[in-house]
Image (cartoon, helix red, strand yellow):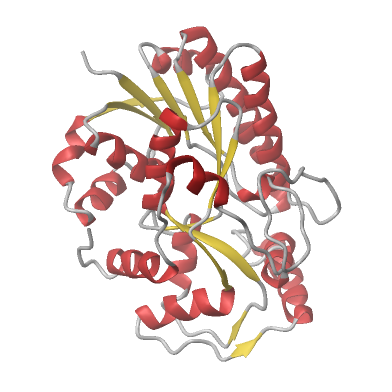
Length: 338
């Protein structure tokens, strides 16, 4: 009998690539999804990679991270648990949702894995849970997270979620943590980095002055599967493909859609004004803000991250930003990649 793996967040950008990675490795998989979630995106992403035939091998389980009964049922018979489900938002009005899903939801996953006797858990955290370092200094796993006025509710929720995993380890759970940066890859429209990809299909007058780290969704999935086998218990691994300025990353995306890249750099005061306008607009008219205080702060920050630890652990070669952009633009344009 083949061993079986549980993937939470199976319809998300990490989850769908993880399902594909596991199925190609001939693993049996069960995927947790919310009631009413759109699973057609999974088939579309699989088809993009020429693997549509593998979709039928997914065993779907309906459930919510806050439904402990559903989690207990989904966890039965699982050897490995990949916890990729999370809410990603920098809107301060969603602080409670972030805490409930990311913190309480992770606690429920940990408890269910312990109760079911799962062999190992791989938890998807974020670079948002990594500590601060000045511009020019690469951030790594050893940096302690610090709270403060500029810390987003999302960052806070991912830090607290990691503490829940560490609590589970103290109670006997074998677990490893991955901390991806900005994930670029095919996924559901208007969510995660696909919202950015969609925005790059229209001209921009300005680009942000900051920098960040980017990683291909395919690399995140491959590293998770390898670290499930080789990663140290309780260890965190930054998953970073390449550090790049927003000007370069945005420019590559724009060019991939035949759009001229923005030539001018947005001044900090412009971004500060933008999030305030968006706050007032959405306060009165509703909807999701295009810019928040958190994303405006991120856009002006110069940051970089080190992938040295994971490269030394599994010898992985990450894709470049050019490769990430080529893949996601091919998906957005409806042409095959692979």
